[in-house]
Image (cartoon, rainbow, N blue to C red; front, top):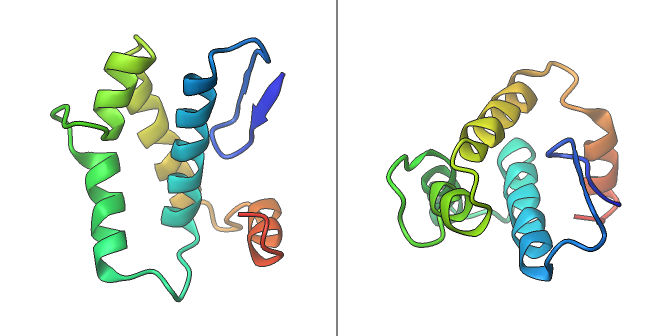
Length: 105
């Protein structure tokens, strides 16, 4: 099993590699949105917003990925809900902060 902690899911180790790769991209985008770094440009922040909140499927935004690659259109809602929870969390999941500061993400 492969654990995606920011998404709070586990994926079977026999899952297709492209699915695992896109889950890693989504997890990284969540971490960038919750814990922005000083090097992030305005364009990067704008791109993250577009990735998560464009409701219409655009090539390679969250909605497109969930509908076309995962065959699970409601997954985008689940990810947005998880992002909202992480942004609202007062402690901001110290586990991720510690890993981010140490350079794991």
